[in-house]
Image (cartoon, rainbow, N blue to C red):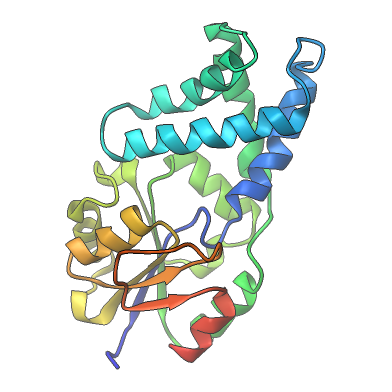
Length: 232
């Protein structure tokens, strides 16, 4: 087994439970903008449409087809179009409120703190590589108590690159002073995290919380974070 020293984690959907935190946030946005009174009902329908459009637009953002600003408001705009509401200003106001509230949420996947304590005690250097937005991601890790575990957080904004492009991984290795041989990427996204790491020549762990099928070939696959104790 390689002697890893540097562990590079993805944040959203890997450690920080984006879906659970987003659902809580969207409930607050839904109430704040009185969306039920505007015919956006029931909430669960609004929520499912949001998840659908958010996933599509994140994929387009990852592939460089849209900007981060377009992603932020168009996921709301597309969701509201499902309810025959096409106000661009409302969508932008909802986006601003969503991004104000979301980073204050603290729901983590089971065993997150336990496994990070375990890895730190064993002497690993822990880092984050995230396609999320700089200000938002820093708020998330500060509010959820994760910041103390990580030496570096590399974002797509700071590195001027996006997973799965190899440049963001090279930037992260350089920033951490780490070699490929002593580094491994851990993430939930088969394209951005796993194929991205493979493209960069880095070992990787597919954190498959949702039991997804896969065509990519990670170095390891786990289904919950506690399993990392078997690897490290």
